[in-house]
Amino acid sequence: MSLDDHAEELASDLGVDKEEVKADLENLVEYSVPVEEAKQSLRRKYGDSGGGSSGPSKVDIADVTTEDSSVTVTGKVLTVGKRSIRYQGNEQVIHEGEIADESGKISYTAWEDFGLSAGDTITAGNAGVREWEGDPELNLGESTNVAFEEDIEVSYPAGGDSDLEALEPGDRGINLEVEVVEVETKTIDGRDGETEIKSGVLADESARLPFTDWEARPEVAEGAAMRLEDVYVREFRGVPSVNLSEFTSVAPLDRELAISDTGTRMTVSEAVGTGGAYDVEIVGNIVAVRDGSGLIERCPECGRVIQNGQCRSHGGVDGQDDLRVKAILDDGTGTVTAILDDERTAEVYGGDVDDAKAQARDAMDKEVVADTIRERIVGHEYRVRGNLSVDDYGANLEVSEFEVSSDPPAERAESLLAEVAE
Image 1 (cartoon, helix red, strand yellow):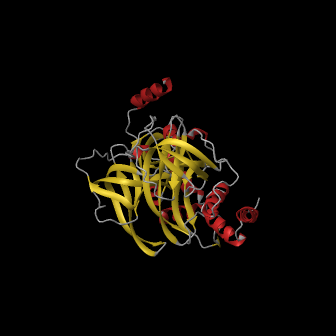
Image 2 (spheres, rainbow, N blue to C red):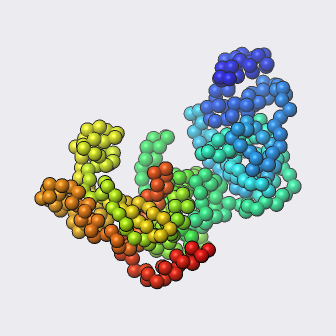
Image 3 (cartoon, rainbow, N blue to C red):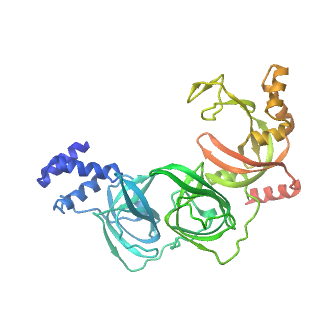
């Protein structure tokens, strides 16, 4: 049934103007409110609370699917975040987080302030369901009834306190105790014009992650140890990224954090299993150097590697010479493609772009540069540090450090044997 058909049905049932109902319906559906929930909301608005339905049935949270239009659930509020969004040209504050019962947990967005706090047990009646990044999410709107209940026990902690290692894209209402290890101020083209923000890297005892402070707070400075309350997490280049909104509170931390100068040591299988990891270290052997390594050409417009003077986005261009290595790293648990930028490629090659061009010109073949690199690194063990992303095409590690490994082989063998035994 089309949106026009839904509007005509509603107008007929309610005895109101179809165009007015259609405009209201379009506004709700435009922001991913499920059609059935939107229709029930409009029935309430126009005075028909019945709507020919007995209302949604009560279900366990684990049984909520994206096929549901609306449900009634009882659960404990785990986190409550607050954020401002742009909706239909206006600023609107939403509340968001997670709710859990004995069966599982689910994210929610509340379009009204229901007075929720972490630890509350509620029944959300007639909560809409929408798909968010492939999973169901509850939508608590004007047609939702929220009742506070007696406390229930769930297997998830309430309150939002977390460490960086445990964060996942989509987390909201999270509290962290971290140190700012890198920060820079940028001016971006925001939704209200040019906006100043801060971005960089946060660290705690468990991990490091990138962050963005959309308010560019002066207290978010390099070396500052802070408690952050009410941050949300997005995915940035395949890894979780911490976001500070206008509602995030920032306070000095009254304890020191034991921050490591090294990345988080992982095996390839562990790193790939995370779906994306920031600042990890992997020790393994370089078993091959892939095509597209050595002396390459990039598009001057977008920086993509070009083939035969052709960019996928900008067509025929005059390429700019550059250096790159795409090396296959194998640690016995799996493989990743380690991508070295021009600076690190120059280090393993032993020369810069001009040297590579001269070698290619003398040999009348660009491939000699990649061959030289292969001779120097294939078959050797390296400690590789960087940011890992995983997609449909495999796992890639954007390299920040690339050094010959100093790990004793016997210790590594014992560690791998112990892992296999488990």
